[in-house]
Image (cartoon, rainbow, N blue to C red):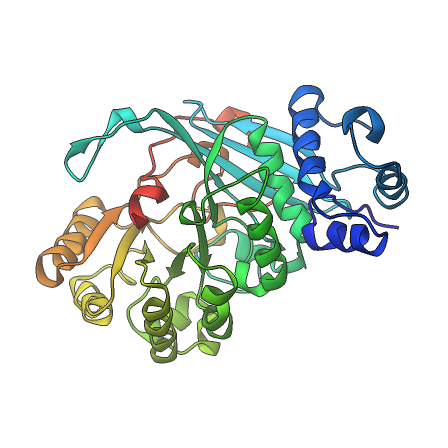
Length: 381
């Protein structure tokens, strides 16, 4: 029988209701499990009575019989970038598969936002995986080279936040790790509902869902998860180029995708983040900038230009030079008035940067300095 996670919110709440127990105890259980994880790490045996006090006796019987351990996964390895700004966790699931999750740390005092000094101090963003592998097959992404293996349960998704919280206080969560989140829709929705409730209490405004553009899921996302941020992995301004570098785009024609985004924005009244990876000679010419500008100029968007991260022998692509990226940005800003940022990457030395997540263990001899990333929170405000 596979291990079950107490952080699968729907599962444990149904168990409590079926046993005639009040589900209000579930967030209390989660709180104590997190505290125990921070103090003691993972334990082979979990003493429910000792670690989670003041529950009804029937609740302890249920937990012992249904959940051998509170967590169904475990941390296999932890890798830190040379500057200690990025940490990648390799997590082993109960079925023996692995996924990766990445913590990115920022000091808001080191920069300005909208021309003004920023208050606050250290904060961390967690990049979460939703699947083992990915079926989208984007040719510039290492995860796509794995193919699709399996979906994560909602509990396995939330457990990434549990483990990361032991290392850093997580303020923002981005579903930009392994997998296409909207292809694991029900687990995504359940996990976000857990993250925004007790004890995590993350603001929906600090959670971002990234998708290649699964139209039918976008059409219902705002009703199921109002208030969060939507990021679209667009990466090309015309359908032909999208299909060349993102085979799954054939199923989601650009015209229909833009119609879905227009309706999403009308309902949500929120900015949409457009992710655009810069591939030399493929989608980074001035004509592409003008095509992109015309495509999104009627939307409230932030365009995030992403330098391509090398992925060894898996890719035929090259990184656009700084002059091309800068010119691309100037066209979008100057000709179309579109807010445009350039993402500076973190975690390249531990294969934890955008597009590099694939289940492997980096060679420690190759570790160098990681750069600084534009925080997702700054892009969607």
